[in-house]
Length: 150
Image 1 (cartoon, rainbow, N blue to C red):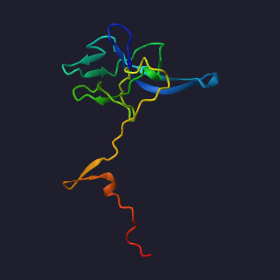
Image 2 (image 1 turned 120 degrees about the vertical axis):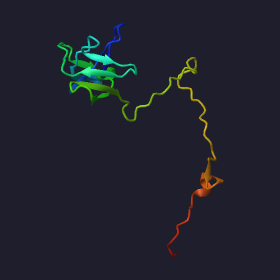
Image 3 (image 1 turned 180 degrees about the horizontal axis):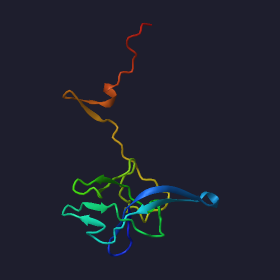
Image 4 (image 1 turned 120 degrees about the horizontal axis):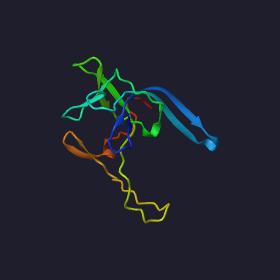
């Protein structure tokens, strides 16, 4: 899926058909996704939206366009689930790829010098509840070998 940049908020849904990496000099690279796009121009014909903001796509209608490519950074991963009511329609489910975390931006230190290090806080003794007895992690580690004779 690629989000539209217009005010209408039209999203473009499609099927990934090819991945192209364009390599420039000095190690610069651009990754493009080639897609077959579904026609989502009109609600009710190309897509439906229910009261729970679930979007269903008509998979028989393809968008005839010469804009086959989208930048990989503009794409959002989705998968399609077959609709039980109509075999030509599929439900869109957005996913978050593995190992991708939504980290908040750090706006506190914008006026500080670049390269300034912040003090890192770390708990030295971590208490672990082990069968109702609070112990530190160091107390639970056995540093001797057992089961072997000298």
